[in-house]
Amino acid sequence: MIILGIETSCDETGVAICDNYKILASYNKTQYIHKKYGGVVPEIASREHEKFLPQITKRVLKESKLNYSDLDAIAVTNGPGLMGSLLSGVSFAKGLSQGLNIPIIPINHLEAHLNSVFIEFGDSIKPPFINLLVSGGHTQLWIVQSNSKYNLLGETLDDACGEAFDKGSKTLGLDYPGGPEIEKLSKGGNHKLIDFPRPMIHHKSYNFSFSGLKTALINYIKKNDKYSPNDVAASYQEAIVDTLVIKLNKAMDDFKIDTGIICGGVAANKRLREKLKQLDKKILFPSLKYCTDNADMIAFLGEKKINTKSVKTGIDFSAYSRGIVL
Image 1 (cartoon, rainbow, N blue to C red):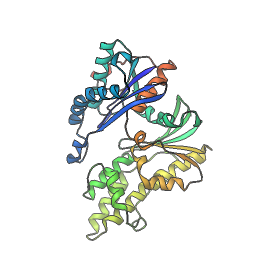
Image 2: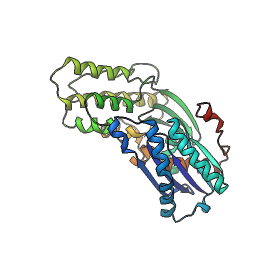
Image 3: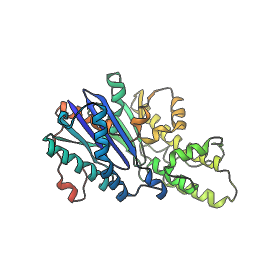
Image 4: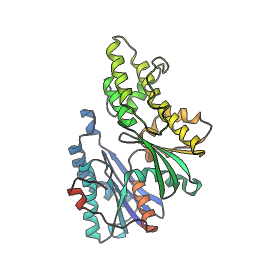
């Protein structure tokens, strides 16, 4: 079954084609226009999606040597995400669905991330496993019981770790997105110099909190006229990474699960990968292109859902008029 996947939850415009659980072609366009604003501007993001979706769709169809008439269904992200961005993708998918008379498969963005590891590793990954989902908008710990059963163990109570990187980067006068900028600046820095807090690491729950860490960074800079940006960046990054590693390790120990999966944009952080490898556990990372927002995981999960009849095709578009994203 040939599935067209569309991802527009934030500022990545992605289109992919999946057939028999193999990605035939995909393209992901990052909206660098937001860089000058220091963060994603929702209205601009939705306009960029509208501009590039037709072009990217034609591109992936050409690369896969397919026509619109070859498509069997369309999988599209319908939440969570920025309302305008989601509407751009859903509206485009609805137009194709009506024009081609094929069904729409609504896809939860987070569920797609949880399934992204199966694109590469397939049946070699045997649930249960603990999934650490870390991105600009989410920091969550999940226990994946099967290919379609997931339980949320904990999540951030305030800011996501990716947001902590972004705001930390802005505080240090660096560019957006903040994760790569802080990682770059931290090279050569002493990560042991400043003892920034590791929020909630001794808490019994699996929840996270990063707002206090951001405040600690701001207060440190205010109180110290002379400081090494490299040392501050390295110490700040270390606090975020330690918090993630400690919480993941705790969940794996508590549930006696020896396999952990890391996904989401922050999974690209080299220091995080380095410290996770020090754990005496099996830790797997999807390829970098599957860590960030992408349409491959949307198309892949869409095919799984329609093949297993685990979803009703179509979307309740009335929900959008109420300001609700399912």
